[in-house]
Image 1 (cartoon, rainbow, N blue to C red):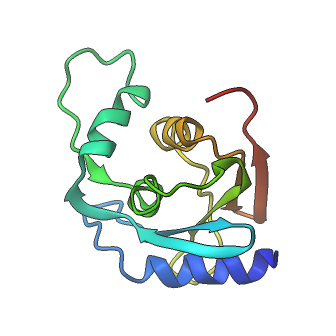
Image 2: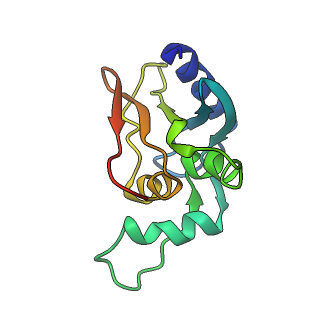
Length: 142
């Protein structure tokens, strides 16, 4: 698996992001299975029921505060493959976030996205950091 190629694909996916607002960033995600890209996604202003469901992991201690369910890139990509009959422990998620000058930025999945990734049984996550990229392995049963 070529990590640079996967991040390039995730960066390409970010070009379709339409997230707006003061802190608007473009984030892209690809989901691979045994080295083959299965799905791409980007963050969007649109809502998604999966994002709405998993947002409870982001704001556990906030009470009944309304949280807009703007869709994260990971949710967009994973929702395209969640019904596939595959061994998700063999899948990998790549997340790219870049600054305006094109340099990488921190794209570690939020608690909601990590919970969704874990629920599918995906073990490997790669994401950009301010100095390159990081790889995490999610342990435990889904």
